[in-house]
Length: 464
Image (cartoon, rainbow, N blue to C red; front, top):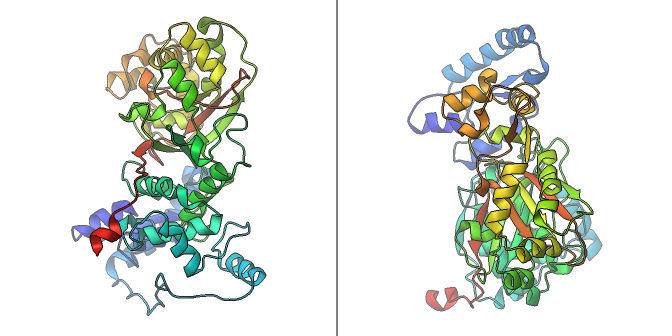
């Protein structure tokens, strides 16, 4: 659809070819980008599961006529649709139980009980921060809806967030409307889900847990803010199964991962947001979408040299088709995450290692055979054209020379294009030698960081 929109914007008629099951998503994407009713041609079945002969028959017998019709027939005018209610319109009333059933029926909740977002509750929530409820932070390109302070607060009330978390929610919303992040990809078929990483001196005082059970629900702040993101993507960005959310399996929402500020301060390391220009004492939110994760349990060793191979093996094990973000779906955009427990981070720091030293060690040790890398990006997944070898890709300048130091298919090659592509965070039980690794989804929810502004807003004062 985005290619069609680019063509239509300069006056070139287009037809988008989509597979079965994606008609609703394609239509919603066009509508969200301001091009409602763009012609579609629907391909029977899924192209990756068809032989070439079958696919050619389907194109000839099914798709061609739709393409011709889409290019030659006028676009049907949009019907007189009932517009969405205004922010202060009351669209439902009833008892608590009646409202729960209504929200579930209409898809306005995530399947869990919600706090009814009455006008009084939302206004009370906003009163703490002083923000102008009608301020627009940007547009959700997947739905065309404005991202407003009011809508942020409505969904925050629904998930039970505390009013003092509003500055964090605003920073997350700023990430969602930042083109760098690419929120429009939040419903792709592999089902990656966003991980919010909070860092800075204010986190602990706001009730966020950075220690034992750092990735588990149960702490109100971590859980409610993490749930807010999923609900906001659903209600404002339109990521529901009948519109944009096409996850084949998907995951539950992820709680906020909070970095251990005291440990970072003690060992002199910057948080993950340091990779994006922020300082250790900045309050920040960093976010990316993760495909999958795995524990690296019971890391044994008292020196960096002893523990590096196991940690690197975890990063290598978690990396699969995602390597098409090294080359294929993207170039040099794969950036996996290593979460170190505080005791592991201290093991490195006590030996004089900086965070950058750990990144370099992971780059040098997290490697897989070249033949496996090539199969993952060009044979086992149909996401890279030409099925070129890494040597060919290096010769063409698509990957660094380190991927082509020989032609031996068993040679070990990196999983990323440079040490700075290994993201590192510090959190978890400070008495346990465990780590966690995540494989990220490249530019489909790319790493983006924002500073959190906890100052009382002057929005309303300025507007008066």
